[in-house]
Length: 267
Ligand SMILES: Nc1ncnc2c1ncn2[C@@H]1O[C@H](COP(=O)(O)OP(=O)(O)OP(=O)(O)O)[C@@H](O)[C@H]1O
Ligand SMILES: [Mg+2]
Image (cartoon, rainbow, N blue to C red; front, top):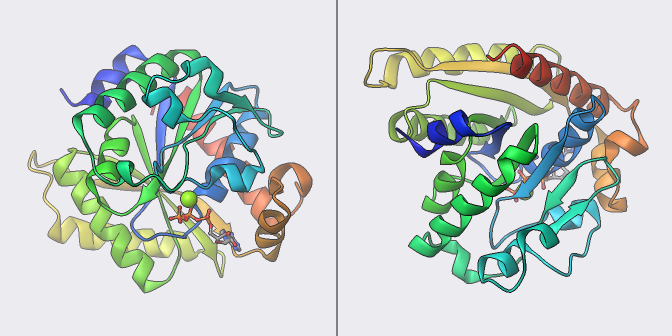
């Protein structure tokens, strides 16, 4: 049984890894704002900065924690002391930044990470893991702890090529059969649906899951390219709470609805 499956059966909440093949596609922006949209439904949500060593959720949220995941990992602080409330109505657990020791997956990191997630998950309806990009050991390990995977990509060919590579690794190494997909910075309505269809065809042809079951890419929605996103990040504010009517905010609210429905349907 994989670790992800083991957690799935024990935990109260779902653990969703927000990840991507290519960096800079909007994972942190989406995690921070999607959490706020889910919290508006009354769900108890935690966002964990799983991009150990290169964290920037703190920057997006304008939080300067005294205690980070790093302090918890080295035994300098208790887990409960590292959890902070946010203006978005959810909690965060922030990692430190600039720590080279987290660029390589060691048995200690594995153990600490697993222990942290196992201790946290039962207390929340949804835990979002804002992961690093790519297919390094650390990133793949953080994804392995999630019950669901949400891949973020932009419509650019470089981002899609890297998304394909990440999906392929997750299908073969982690035996994932279902991967959720969001297109960010979409230029036109319908972008994401068309891209998902094309990517699914390539996956059907070239990626074998081993068991014969096809890998299903589930398009959850598009978030449009929206100048308000950059402005909100520059001001270090949550777009969803400060500009709930912005096109990207409306798309995030829709995405939250969809995720909530999927989870309550047990899909
Ligand atoms: N929908 C959008 N419209 C316009 N700009 C966007 C949108 N989404 C993200 N951006 C821009 O992309 C930048 C990068 O986003 P973000 O930091 O969330 O990416 P990331 O995937 O977490 O990056 P990393 O891989 O470095 O962790 C943001 O600072 C913002 O300027
Ligand atoms: Mg990020």
